[in-house]
Length: 362
Image 1: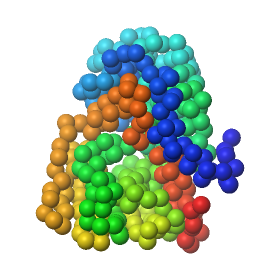
Image 2: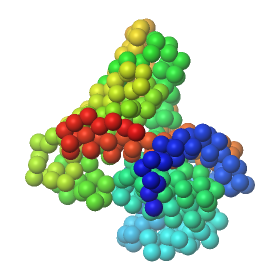
Image 3: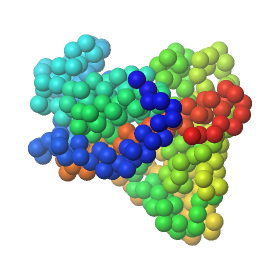
């Protein structure tokens, strides 16, 4: 049940007191293990090509189980990763995972329309929860997932790998410490050409659309570079393939206004490749290009510094950081309320584009 509109800001503010808000549940349910077993829910591209291989590199967690609605995938996963029959589930018997001590963490890697349901079910099963971005389709769905994790005293982390990446963390520090003065303008773009004509990302009911997918990177960048929450948004959609993009946005441009007077100009697309971040401060600038690539981040600043720190695997770093936080009873770097804040803005982006006017955020 969604919270009344008038209480949503209070809900977010209460949670974000909130290293502390989620720290107590983490302590109460802190597993007494050296490494935590992860079950991947959904065995599409991201799980198959990125998360499962990354879990072979992690120190604090490992691949323990799978949840799939495609039985034909099971033999390969069992052969490749040694997953026993007792740790294989489908969507009908998923709730039985509550009785499996091998699995400590459920990582939800499904179409975003299913994220909230499986976060809630995982929490009700007493499992720690990782959820891929975007956190959900709506603010109400985000609130339901957060509430379920709080009530079951388990942690909730959103798969924002960039917040775990060292160059991005340096950009965040530069803004927070005002190394070049206050941020004034953020320009961020993230997109790729998707040649598919019938994929879930092109279906509204399943949570498709460029803004939900790649747009989250640009929105995150605007928020973490300024260190502020936007107060107003304008937006517009466009498409070069109206026969394919009949339900969701192929390309979205949006602008954000922040309390300090800083602005963000953002773009995201399934119709063209784009991958850059430029931040103008009072006394300088930084640029990353690419700023969210799997194979590494590169960039420079106006004072000559370079951003080229490398980590072996971004997904492994993200999952290890989050698993260690659980083991040590610490709050997550990107907890559920971080995902909620993004969805709150995404809803406003779609409203602004539909109305063709500026939308003020509460």
